[in-house]
Every structure is written in C-alpha cells, then in structure tokens.
Image (cartoon, rainbow, N blue to C red):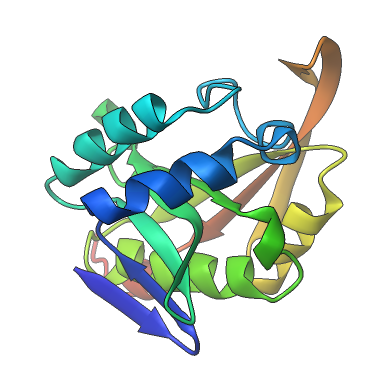
Amino acid sequence: MILEGQDIRLRQFEEKDIPPLAFLCNNKKIWDNVRDFLPFPYTEKHAQEFVRTCQGEDPQVTFVVEYKGNFAGCIGLVRQTDIYKLTAELGYWIGEPYWGLGIATKSVNLIVDYGFDQLGLVRIFTGVFDFNKASQRVLEKAGFKLEGIFEKNVLKNGKILNEYRYGKINRGLLSCQTD
C-alpha cells in the first residue's frame, strides 16, 4: 500500500529503513514529543523489532513517511476495539532534519483519507503535549478540532502535563448512514 501526495509518500516499512529509522529516532527532541513507548536511546535493534512488527500488519496502519525519496519519519493509526471499533488514534513523528517543511500536515492528510476511505473509520483522534505547539498547528491545518484539554493528564520527563486532545470526524460516512 502506497499513499502519495506532493513530495510525500507513505509506504510500508522495508529492511532498508532500519538504519535511518534508528538514526532519526535516536534524538531526544523526538522522544520528548512522543509517548514513552518509543525507547530512548533508540537502537538498530529497536528499529528491527519495529519494522518487523509493522511488516506483519493486516491491514497496514503504520507507514514510513518519505519526503522526496528520503526516509523522513513515521505515521500510523492505532485501531480501537469493542464499541470504539470505528475509531483510531493517530500517531506520528518527523525527523528533525525535516521539520518545518509541511511534511507532517501532508502526511496527516494522507493517512486520514486512508483511514476514512479505505478502513471505514468514523473518527480519528490524537493527544498532544501542551508544549508541542508545532504539532497542534499541524492538526489544526489538517482539519482536526480541539476537543478538549485534559488537565494534568500525562507524565513526561518527570513533569505532569496537560494533553490537548484533537479529533476529526468522517462526515461523508456519517451522511450516508441511515437510521
């Protein structure tokens, strides 16, 4: 599965992605903005395990973000279960050399279209640390709505932080729904 936009390509992980994944992820500035699920320091062994996990996905929900043919980051959807099965959580990061180029916004738009059109999702949401204004802008530019601020909701780097929760609804799918 390949999703493409202007200068951006979302594709499945391959073995060749292990070195650039390990290099870009082994950056405290990346780790400071993501969940602790992503280890730091980040090694090639971590990258190998992650790539193999992603290669086994069916349907594919985690993608390499390529910018002009270069590995630039990662984006994915975590499908929810039970009564939330038409919802997914969005996660993404872009390597520091690629910050400020509009890659995240374009990638978010591509994966949201995929989630709505190919996976039949009704809602996609994500949480952002209160200090991560760049990611908040990415989501707002991609049409996400700030749904609420969860006060003192997360612990990162020894600090208790607010979480900004954003969501986007698949209005097209809902308009087709009958009672």
